[in-house]
Amino acid sequence: MSSELNHEAIEQVVGFLKQSNRILFITGAGISADSGLPTYRGIGGLYNVETTEDGLPIEKALSGDIIDERPELTWKYLAQIEQTCRGAEPNRAHEVIAEMEARFERIWTLTQNVDGFHHRAGSKNIIDIHGNLHDLRCTSCDYCRTVEDYSRLSLPPRCPKCEAIVRPDVVLFGEMLPQEKVQSLYKELYEGFDTIFTVGTTSVFPYIAEPIRVAGSMGWKTVEINPDTSNVSHRVDVKLAMRAATALEAIWQRYLET
Image (tube, rainbow, N blue to C red; front, side, top):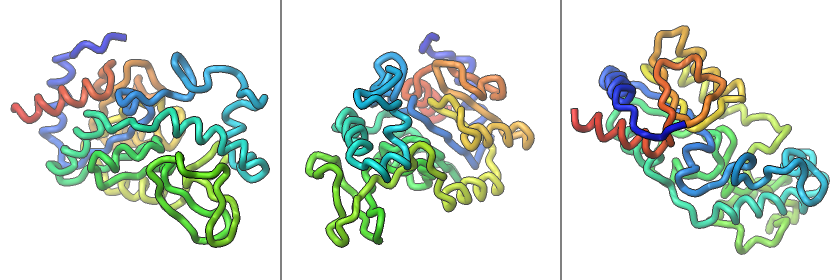
């Protein structure tokens, strides 16, 4: 679909912002695509084949079961993902959300991404529901650390305190979401929003689509920024079939002009 500016839709979104004090952003892989990060599948994806070279689907290799049974295998693919993303920086979409956070009464970002870009761009109110690839924790004791990249890690890394396997503090396939982050999301939804943006996500997970469903019943305005059709495209008030950085920059500049 076209990424050309839809001026009428942008004006409509700016109108929503002018009536809003409380905004929720829901972000997925599409917001980091402008930073050069690949998706796991699809055109240019890291794993757009049925199985990995080890004969497992990538969802199985990156699962909680396999990191327990064969940590060296899960770490092999975690390291591939981290190396592919190494050197990438937050883009204008992340920066706009951080700038907006400083201007509005209450802004929260619910992100599925594990790249940490929202933090690096300056956002403070973040629910990174799937964790952060750079935060490591021991599987046996309370040891944890944050690393810039995996270049100096021996794989699989071991805890310097107890010698157990260390893993990224992320939600792998088949694992439960962290309860405190789920509770944080529902607390903020209970507080209420005026406008919800869903940016660069297919919204296949129920907890990612849920805020848009709630918005419909509460009368909150909803905006989707996504070149493709998602599971919530039929529910939103405004659909911008654009890349995230282009759309958010255009909306923000127009808002600041008016």
